[in-house]
Image (cartoon, rainbow, N blue to C red; front, side, top):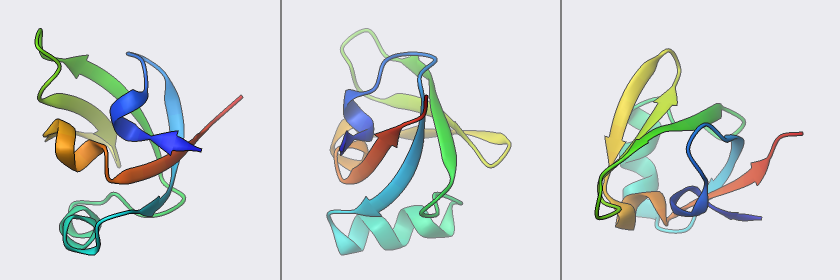
Length: 75
């Protein structure tokens, strides 16, 4: 188990849970549901923000927000 902030570009992962309940509630409203498969599409040159593909659209997240999302690798 690791966080969304740690994945590499193009890597697909499954959302497991959220560390921060406040950020988790915000992300739930934007389609980041537990069980949802997401992938990293872009990362800014300095690492923040990142863009993920989730539920058919691209979502930009701050590194702090991505670090609060626990994910697992898909093989």
